[in-house]
Image 1: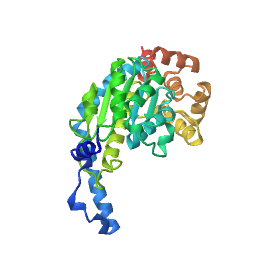
Image 2 (image 1 turned 180 degrees about the vertical axis):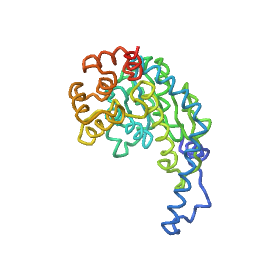
Image 3 (image 1 turned 90 degrees about the vertical axis):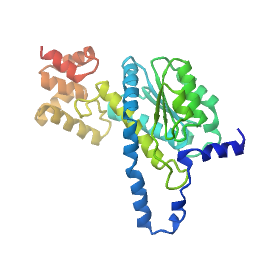
Image 4 (image 1 turned 45 degrees about the horizontal axis):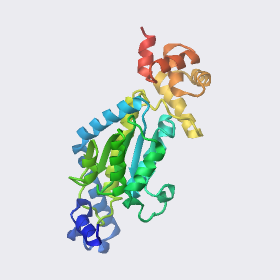
Length: 307
């Protein structure tokens, strides 16, 4: 694609549109600019809401595969790639997932998290190599993320994953995007032109973060990683999380501090096991066995003990 072709393509994208009414924004008082930005951001959730049926369908398909042992793999460049890596990195401490279960791929590799890696986003071959290194299977789900919906790295990842039989989701912020069309589940959250022309780390980035939050969080809820709205699979890896673990057990059971400490000790610090032990009146090993037989779903394990 020539430089002039690319310019014409970008000019046709909603995310790249120029807004003449904001041409003098740099002359405004800081508070006025902040109000403008805040007003722009307020419309993002409504744009996401339009896509909720598509998001829900994608999550159901994703959760089905993850229940079979599949992985969730994000692939993107620049801000989109960083958001995928961020979402993936927060799953182990929040839901006690294996670090290899939710993976974020960014064009250019880890270095691209903090600095621009020139040309990486333009390479669909790089996306194929990155996916091949992960040995993608039909149980896996690959989510291509790109505000424009035209980023070769994200499109290449989706196309290659689909050829390998994996579930594919394309998340973009323009209608009729190549990325959404390439995926089985296309999600296009159209938030409109940015306050600063083409700066898609703004509204488009916010929209992508909201959707990625849904993809991972609701999938984990479907997989039994929560009990109600409690993070019962939280990994207590620091003082704050250890305190949170005790609070979660308390909220779920109403047990005394002494009972909670005993249950957590006997379960090796596993919150879900401790809750089951306290609510069902079983010991730690029995709680672990019941949860394993119930596929890790606490409600199912509790229902089994109530029979």
